[in-house]
Image (cartoon, rainbow, N blue to C red; front, side, top):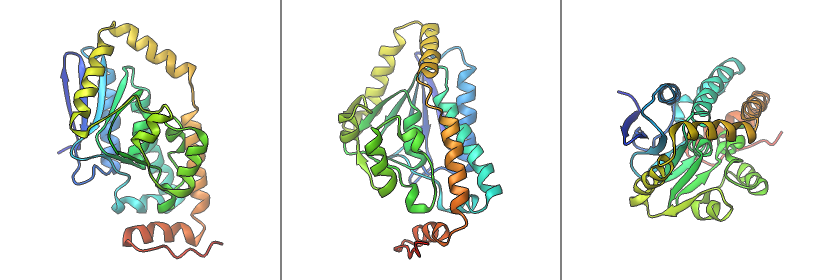
Length: 254
């Protein structure tokens, strides 16, 4: 059984990630997200897409069981390729994508939120660029689509969360609403968008992506090279080990 459910009604496509308990991502989930959005691109009965999570969490980061994928240059390169293609399938979808962020968005979840065109978020939802806590360099390019640079640097250096309300104040979230109405509000926004011509929405999306080119693929490759360079150090292995064992890391700071 896959991690995603896809429904289409009134030309609004709702994509829901459902991987209890936290909607964590793994290789199969990345591949499924990529393939689902490629398939949506080929549909002619869609005007707007909504991406959301089942339960109380939008999307967590990578499954702990797949951290081994980051441990060597060869594995890391191949895994980053899978992850990048999933992110860009959402970012480059030819239809507007609304993120209905129903709860915490951490790591990969934060990146996928950044790939959406517009966000509706639950009150007190947390956005976490948690990569430094697990020894990975990544997702800052996508996080930069949500927050100002100085805030991004705080998130990257600390690994600590910021709230939906804070990001909304900085202009990165369209609306913050109670969790129980997040999807309903996202559908209202999708209906507003879909009052316009399908082809016009597609041309606008293409033009906006071209006019606001953030060099995401290049930035992602820079993250890969930084992660590979970090692999030579004790602290790279210690970060993910400590995170998995739920203990404070013992860095040697060399």
